[in-house]
Image (cartoon, rainbow, N blue to C red; front, side, top):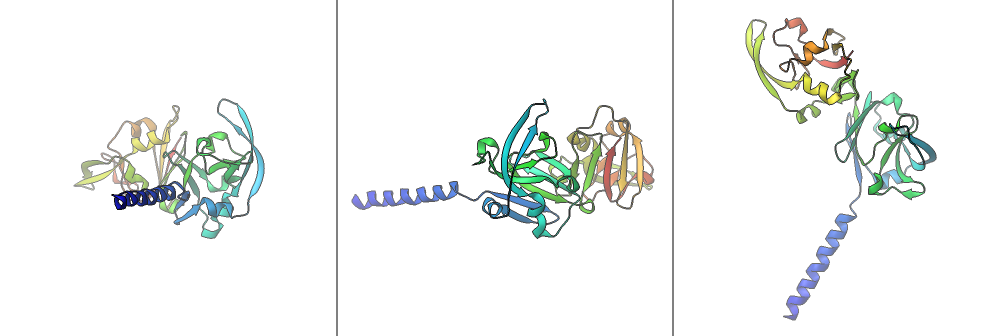
Length: 262
């Protein structure tokens, strides 16, 4: 009986240690897109930092002033030797914010606020603070930084509430649709994501009038917005091709790179 009790005690201690290790697992941000890497909280704290005051302006106009400690995003990315066109910041809950890289010279990855480590309740342990941008672009619970170039993504911009920059991998999260239609005199089957789904994700503005599709070589086609939005059979395939059933082949844009709502 004593050996049994001792065994149970030892097992409890081992399980307790394992649980403690899990609780202390290092918080890490994933770097994806043009390069792949990881940035741990320990790595971030070991880098040259800045301490500064910044005012977060909410959409309601409320202003909140805090002191921060963190590292410039541009310094974090130096080791990857890459200059993206866009950067998408992803929170733990999947919320995303995309900005042009040129607008991120004042972006910091912060781990202290008002002299204390940022707690989980406060959106930590790492928060994105952009001192020259509206508070709606500051991100809590930062978990992933996606570095995106025009050569490996589709950009949806213009009269939209958010700018979307989607890689081929990003397209996998959308529901696919399959259609059969005539193309150059032959019946062919295509699978892709309805353009309407992408426009809804970008949250198009109500006063949108036109929509323009641009390929990698600069070729463009333009339509009335309502004409495109009302047709759920207009697709974008995994290889970035615009499928336009019922339209002449010149409107089927290959190597699509940009969708602009006008």
